[in-house]
Length: 64
Image (cartoon, helix red, strand yellow):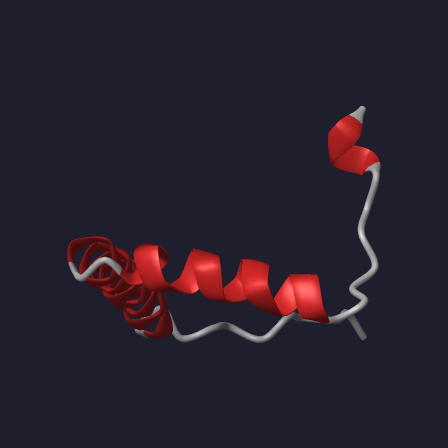
């Protein structure tokens, strides 16, 4: 007896592509929103202050 692979339903393919499209659009909207509202102007100084207070391990890979 020969093994016959199951036929896949081709209707699932367009939904998968549509999901990726909506994911990318949502990510782009999120990045745009953060850039327009000045999120990094608040976030970066906050993180630098937290890192100064906590002993965080640092990686040396960025330094060369």
